[in-house]
Amino acid sequence: MNELIDPENSNAFKSRLSLVDFNNLGFGTYVSDHMLVANYSKGKWHNAEIVPYANLTLAPSTLALHYGQTVFEGLKAFRMEDGRISIFRIEKHYQRFCRSLKRMAMPEVPFDIFNIGLQQLVKIDKDWVPSKNGDSLYIRPFVFASEERFGVKVSEEYKFIIFTGPVGAYYSKPLRVKVEDVFMRAAKGGTGSAKCGGNYGGAFFPTQQAQKNGFDQILWTDGTPQLNIEESGTMNAMFVIDQTVVTPSISETILDGITRDSLLNLAKDLGYKVSIRPLSVFEIIEAHKKNLLHEAFGVGTAAVTSPISCIHIQGKDFFLPEYDRNSFCTKAHKLLSDIRYGKAEDKYCWNTILS
Ligand SMILES: *Cc1c(COP(=O)(O)O)cnc(C)c1O
Image (cartoon, rainbow, N blue to C red; front, side):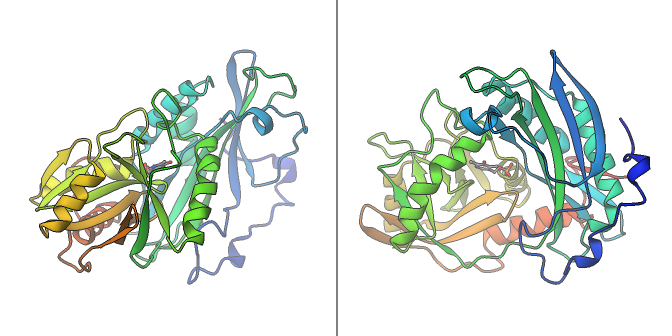
């Protein structure tokens, strides 16, 4: 892989780092100076290189724009207390990337291009990794069908790109969520467990409707009479019921979240019981009635945890107790952060520390 850049152009290269307001990063505002690009054609990946971040030129007939072969990942790099940079669970993200690609009939990216490429990219833009607690460098690998052709077909050409950007801690007030029983995010046999663009596109309209009616997010269900809970918006859903951390089992319709997996490990370390199983909305109502529904929150890379204050189920509001520093979601969020920033032991070897 080329370490860097078209040398003939390197004089023209000007860093945009000085334009970044590190006190007010937001989420998705800034992109770093470089990106990795690799192309797939004739059955293999080639020409992986790191180049200055720049726009792409695409033919209007580019297949991804019409038939939706697009898959992405999202992971983060952290500036540790001692100044070194750690990247969280690269291999687990890579494995999920490959599963998503396979489901969308797209070619897997070789591990070396993903892993070494990603590490080199973060190293080249290391000054973009923020140092404030809670901030991080968001890393966005993705593949899309780049063949120019308008007939419906599986693309024979693809582009793999990784870009990054510094992001701030994502604090939100506790959310008011609506249990959705009309629209579905995913169906058995569908693409719900793949991180493909279309899943997001399809969720926007129902989410907009919910927001018009005063909710922040949707709690997706499986559409069966039991109304089993699936995910919270674009995050996995987690509950604390009677001192047990409960989360729906991974299925074809639920994305296998890496934050979810990490927090389930930490739950045991924090002394909580863990229960992974289908969870019906009616069980939530029962637990609430008995005052045993202590917490409900979404979990995902962007926000880590996103607490829920009210669950709206078929016309009725069910309020949750307030969250404080003794809540599981607060303690688990803090422990996960401490591991990522090198303040707590990384006993599961989740961090890749850049040399
Ligand atoms: C990415 C994603 C998640 C969270 O996964 P993480 O690996 O924790 O970031 C959950 N649900 C959906 C639909 C997602 O796309």
